[in-house]
Image 1 (spheres, rainbow, N blue to C red):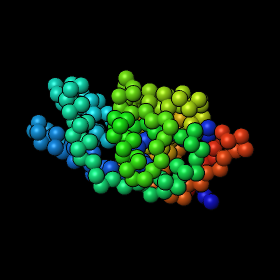
Image 2 (spheres, one colour):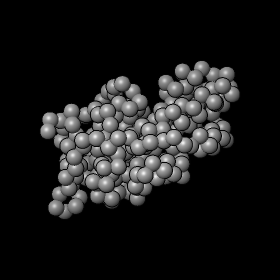
Image 3 (tube, helix red, strand yellow):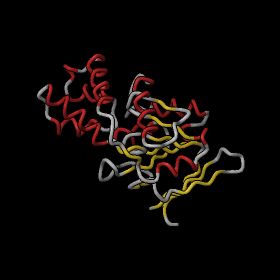
Length: 218
């Protein structure tokens, strides 16, 4: 099979646009907020994907960026739940990986992330780093570094799956290799490979149960 082969100790996934297709819900939340505050929705959507709510607010409307306002908008996102679907190939890939060798790092709050992942029939990870589990969100690497630490692996021996520039930058800054997914953006820079979904990714596990070989189609 032509493509890319990566030998790693763990696989780290973003959630929205990577494991779960929830783009419509996320964008609906921001469109509602933009209308409430008479803001340009295009400017918001240009930077919102892959970032925590508070940090998106700080970029587009710093005068509104408070913890209370971010919490209010996160609650609004929970009300928008419904209609999510798994990204093609996500279920097969997660089931092929050793359960103790993959994690999710997301800009969504952890309870929402667990509900969204389980709601589309995907397994819940043993390690999930959400929006309020870190001091600084993507593109800062804190989330990916935390996930690697909880899995007991060297971040440089991980591979990150991401669909946004902020997420790719976070993975790179953590020292991981990065597979970019073109589910949200047509292309992504600074990736070791690009895929449209998770179908066709093959997994081989070493005899010790730790080393993972991922074969990613071109």
